[in-house]
Length: 330
Ligand code: ASP
Ligand code: CP
Image 1 (tube, helix red, strand yellow):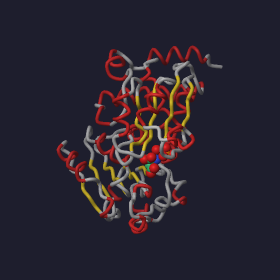
Image 2 (cartoon, protein in one colour):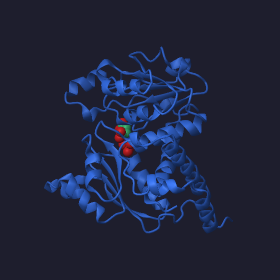
Image 3 (cartoon, protein in one colour):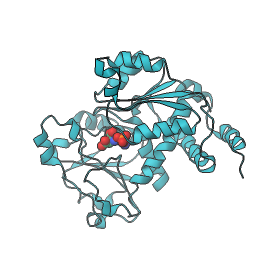
């Protein structure tokens, strides 16, 4: 049987931390994908691959022994919260979990800044999900410990974009040259806001498909154009499906609508079924940050192109890599 301690020391030698660890990742806040360049992505994904190997071989190991992660969630979550908790625990650390702030002193009127100051005095890093755009930047501005943005309203979800990109790489082997179609709620979907920005570091063809009222924000489209991308906007996805290598499906973000009747108008605009996927390539993937509501039929789940459940597992390895890099214990 493999000796886990030996594997741990081996992986530590091979983790690609050099000078970069100290200057770039150690103690870093992760607020927006804008802070990453191609070298950073290479480092994060190389460490994520090592994490995958280690989990497959030994399950968990003590890279972050004694480190405490605070998970502070003002909005509901299954994957982000659980995968960060699993990540720190598989690295030998522990987690302080505030998943339902109504049972914390937030319900007594405590402001975000004070809650952050409290949680940082008990932990080494804070994962924050909050309904207001910009909240992670505010938290990062006052905290002395790293803040990891787990979704700030309709703003960004940077660690999701990293795991989305890792999924594409592991499933298709490359990013450059791909045709990537983002479908659904591109207005409020923070995951596509982050991923589209991250893809601007590569040479890809982007299609945005959404009902008119849920189009990608024009400021973001302009930013992408300024970086040399030429995203094409559509309402009908049948016209782009045949050339798509990555179909990124999103849920209509019901909780962001001020007028519920508008949600009713656009919900169910697009539904992926085995039938609709007949015109898609044989070698392509369908990904989704999840949770899904009705935009991908369960009948499609057994199709090999359905990568959204594998995507969740890739998320564990990416989050393990991020914690190891930010807490600098490799
Ligand atoms: N879970 C993702 C997010 O929190 C996507 C979604 O909720 O639809 O942004
Ligand atoms: N993808 C994602 O962020 O899922 P949760 O909302 O369940 O965390």
